[in-house]
Length: 398
Image 1 (tube, rainbow, N blue to C red):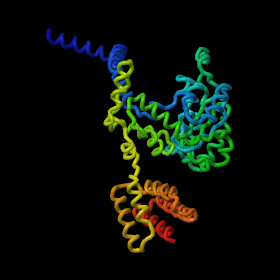
Image 2 (image 1 turned 135 degrees about the horizontal axis):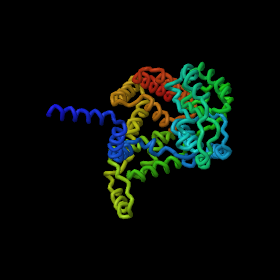
Image 3 (image 1 turned 60 degrees about the vertical axis):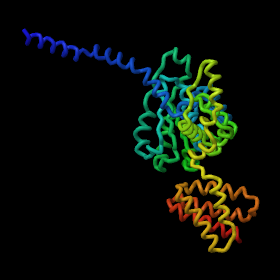
Image 4 (image 1 turned 90 degrees about the vertical axis):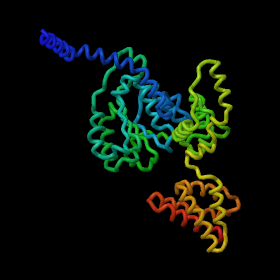
């Protein structure tokens, strides 16, 4: 009798195991119970660069001319091959992604848009396989009701980010692919340096130059994000963020998020009472993002150190000049400051010094360019900075 009951229990367990419908329902129940907490967790852990990425062309800032032209193309539902170029962090990738979403909507976007980072996949094999396969693939169709919401033009879009990293052979192979499948496929090449795109490829695209963001536009965007995230900014902090990022809005937002982690950002408030409490809390300077905090995160060298270095380069006897310069350079290297950052800030200090003649500034600029090239090629930072400062001192004394 006992053996019969055990066999019956085993039978029901096996039946439940092979009942696929019951297993799917149980999995759906478990996922639904975990879904809210997972969504909330992902929202909190999401980088602000992605969280506040423009969702439409109207959200893109400081690129008025480019956005106007693209909106006209959006109205006509016709796009040429495009080439976006300009400094990093100016909205090139965000613009083309927003354009694609407005063209195809959330459903067709997954099947009509292929985004590749050409710095990772930059060989000729990628052009011959992945890009060519997607370019000749037949178009997926949408319902009439979906067409009423989105233009859904009869072509696909291939986005090649950092296209200036592609090899010459890959760019040459891409030229033929663009011509062959131009009826159902459009290409958008994104790069920082347009001179690295071969002329036959560039001539097939409409060029859109993305200019560096103005200080006022970037400052407004930073302050808007800080308000939404409940981050209190000290007076002058937003200007410092823009200055340290050097026109790169993506870098400025990343610095802001890092700084907010140090001071502890306040959760966004909704009610009137909560918002008034938030304003009171923002008066507490200990919880504010300060200028000093931003400069430390951005790796900015303190002005006192740069002034010490400039003072050490002033004309003296050769032995005294070398000893003074070597001491400051050794301190900079020992503290771990980047050689590139030293060159950048020292160049600005000398360029803005009105006591130095313009002819001497011309000679010093040539020295800076030579040392910068050395650092890019991998030279020793300590020796390069030492050589730079001694040669500048020699120019100043002459």
